[in-house]
Every structure is written in C-alpha cells, then in structure tokens.
Image (cartoon, rainbow, N blue to C red; front, side, top):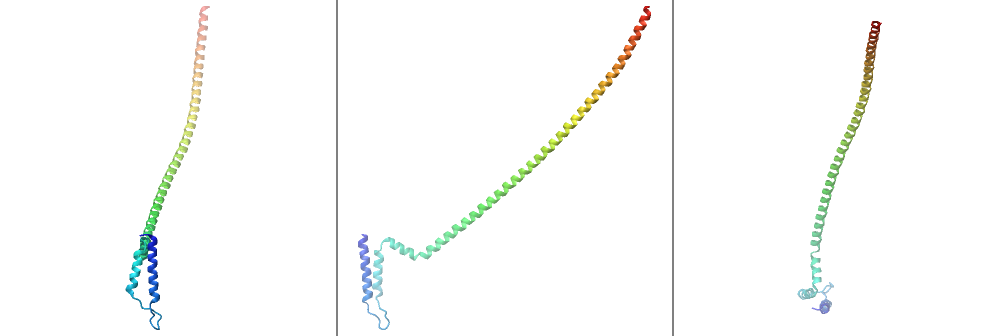
Length: 178
C-alpha cells in the first residue's frame, strides 16, 4: 500500500477518534465522558494495522524495552566479566613470564659472576705459575752456571794437574836426553 494513502487513512481514523471523543456527552457533575469501549478499540486496532511495519516493530520494541534492556545489560555484564577475567589472566601470565625472565637473568648473572671469578682465579693462578716457573728457571740457570763453573774449575784443576804432569814428564825426558 502506498505510504501517502496509508498516512491519510491513519489521519482519518485519528480524526474519527477525536470527533467521537468530542461528541460524547459528559456525565453530569463529573466532567467525564462515557465511551463505547469496543468502538474506540476497533479504531485503535485499525490504526495499528495501517501503521507501517517499522512502527509495529518500534511498538513491539517499546513493549519489550525492559526485557531488551535487561538482556543487553546481562550481555554487557557478561562481556565485562569475561574481559576482566581475560585481563586478570593476561596480567597473571605476564607476571609469571616476568618472574621467569627475571629468574633466568639472575641465574645467568650468577653464572657470569662465577665465570668472572673463575677467570680471575685462573689468571691469578696462571700469574703464580708463571712467577714460580720464572723463579724455577732462574734457579735452574743459576744452579746450571754454578755446576758448569764447578766442572770447569775441576776440569781446570785436573787440566792443570795434567799439564804439571806433562811438564814433569818433559823435564824427565830432557834429563835423559842429556
């Protein structure tokens, strides 16, 4: 049905409704009127039938408004609770990960500190060993020189004895020659 024709019919029905209300006689001393309930309900039903589907939908929504609001509120509360729960879960996971990483860092730092201590101790020990080796080397050289000097002195003394013996032998030979 054309919207203009439908709008016109609705307006006509509203006018009819208004005319009926205006033309009804008042109940004496009350200022109130008596109406034929069925007749007016029929007009209202016809208006409702003529209203576009959107108006009917709005009317239905209006009648269901509190239920829709309650359901929407429940859904919103559920979404909020789920979001808060997820937020707490994410925060807990992040804290656990942070603690794990911090623990790993501390362990690695301990290892590095221990390794640094080991390196320093190794360097200290190496320096001691080198120092001891140098002392031992000097001692061996000194003892070697002393030993060689002793051998040379002994060899020199022995050689001197041999030379003396040779000279004596030559002198004796010279005595025989004469």
